[in-house]
Amino acid sequence: MKAVIWQGTNKVGVETVPDPTILQATDMIVKVTATAICGSDLHLLDGYIPSMEKGDILGHEFMGEVVEIGPAVNNLKVGDRVVVPFNIACGVCDYCQRGFFSACDNTNPNHRMAEALYGAVSGGGLFGYSHLYGGYAGGQAQYVRVPFADMGGFKIESGLRDEQVLFLTDIFPTGYQAAENCNIIPGRDVVAVFGAGPVGQFAARSAQMLGAARVIVIDRVPERLALAEKAGTETVNYEQVDVQVALREMTGGRGPDHVIDAVGLEAHGHGPGALLDTAQQKLRLTFDRITALRWAIMSCAKGGTVSMPGVYGGLVNEMPMGAAFAKGLIFRMGQTHTHRYIRPLLERIEKGEIDPSFVISHRASLHDAPELYETFRDKKNGCIKVVLDPWGPPSAAD
Ligand SMILES: NC(=O)c1ccc[n+]([C@@H]2O[C@H](COP(=O)([O-])OP(=O)(O)OC[C@H]3O[C@@H](n4cnc5c(N)ncnc54)[C@H](O)[C@@H]3O)[C@@H](O)[C@H]2O)c1
Ligand SMILES: [Zn+2]
Ligand SMILES: [Zn+2]
Image (tube, rainbow, N blue to C red):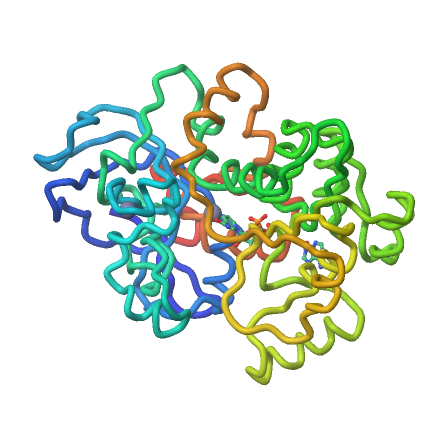
């Protein structure tokens, strides 16, 4: 089959690789009909998430048709159309039972590696997301093996198009969880969202769904800000104004009640903190560039929430802990517990409350993935979200 392969830092290719097979009785094989590139994939492309190996299959946002099931799969049958959450969850461990699906205790065979880096933890397995997260083959491919199929396949029975339900695999639940973590008081709270990428777009719309009085989206990419404005949000371009001053002025001096960091470890920005981050990251003296997080903490109102769907990987410097402490901020973060949200958010899509395909800017064949990874990384050609067809025609470069 054809698959998108990590070939090293800043190198992605499309290669022919063996088809996946059932390895465990609880596995299924899905024929992928649509798959997307995520901001999280960029952290792999750029080499910031450790433990990728040349030859790894990328991709964690995918859906398709069940073509084979193991003998212990009970809830699905061949022919079912499914969306697959990006995290792999067993459904029976203590964490899964309590709804902390991304913390599943049974799906990361490399948990020792995670524990060496992060202490007494082991994040659950993720598709196509490094050996630290289990080394599972990803879904930017024609076929994928889905372990724990009864938990990992959510049947889609309505006539919704792939593009309308594909983002239930990650970015819609991720934006929604980020907004939910803010405990928004409907009709009262102002929510600021740093980052107008796909996750920020869904966080902003989710904050609106949860009743935020106002939502302010911050980025520097004009077409991303324009897309957020279409939903009725206010926007700030952080390259045109001092974002902290702007947010204070827009909120009567208080700051937004809650702030969502939908940027993560590759933040851009300016000011002494940003310069130090860039220099120290090059020298390996810091791991993450935290300008967005710093701005989030500094601008948030007293007692507010700093909700962080943006990914962080390691140690950080110049973290304004004093400000967070002085204001009594609440921090919420982590990989999304995607399984929690798929059914309720699918219902919202079915009711016509939201059509997630609004975020798609580029549709292409899987063969065009190398070029589109670059386009998406560099925010070129108005690129906001890329959806790939694994069965599309070969590119001219092939
Ligand atoms: N927690 C999870 O489970 C989960 C799931 C999916 C994605 N993510 C993470 O969410 C983050 C966003 O993903 P995405 O797909 O939207 O990525 P993206 O790269 O498309 O979007 C990031 C946006 O942030 C903007 N930005 C950069 N620095 C900024 C700053 N200082 N202030 C404001 N905006 C700034 C960029 O211009 C860009 O538009 C990534 O870190 C990704 O890994 C997390
Ligand atoms: Zn993703
Ligand atoms: Zn579990």
